[in-house]
Length: 353
Image (cartoon, rainbow, N blue to C red; front, side, top):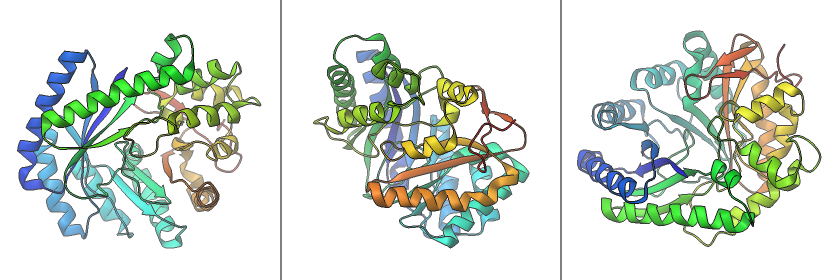
């Protein structure tokens, strides 16, 4: 098991250096004690009130947080701003950004589409740092859909445990309970060492390259992902996560980001899964259209995608994230961690040839 993210939620930038030093000391202590590694360290702020306020916050984050090894979410938006300005802020300050859309909103949808168009002409991969959150506000350590909802200062964690589930044997429910329980205890101890409130664990089952969620689903169901029965297995695992008697925060569901799961990419390339199937899976899981590269020429179809997913949110009663990456070719290189991903047509739902 790895700790995917340790996320500090704060609105106290004056105390940020001391806060981060305490969290770093706590991470060193629990890493040594339990033999766990932390993949990323993060700082999440509340929604921004204006461009000027955002610039000041981002300047502080870049000079203080980045220097201590943290990435940060300092540009969460309740209302649309100028897409060119937002794109420049993301590039200049290397920040993550979230657009909250409680219900479908045409202005917000147009803003997201135009933001991706601006990014596509400059640096398309910057779109990895932007998400739309549909539905109710949640507080999660998962980026980019992360915002300090409660205010004040607190800490939460997310973990990588797909490989641990694959290597183990016996009852799946027991293994999930043991792994997440151990991680949650580490999160509680880390928060105590850092002297901040513990806000819980996001127990979502998420991938990281070969650390594949698709493999877990296939093993649990005795099937290939995309075949009949896939939806039922996703639902089963989600129920096991939801029933964990722990202090949870965020999504707490299976996550299926295309660009981050090597086996999911393979199933798309094999034709077992398409975008429309993935959308249908969002009825029982979260982030079904996360990290999906789409053709720049089809960005105008994103509004229809948001409309469909807004209806899923309404029926499901759970929040849903969207993160798309504009692409010029039939594949896109997502960098050292995740490598190449196929590009998916919004028109046909299939891998672009």
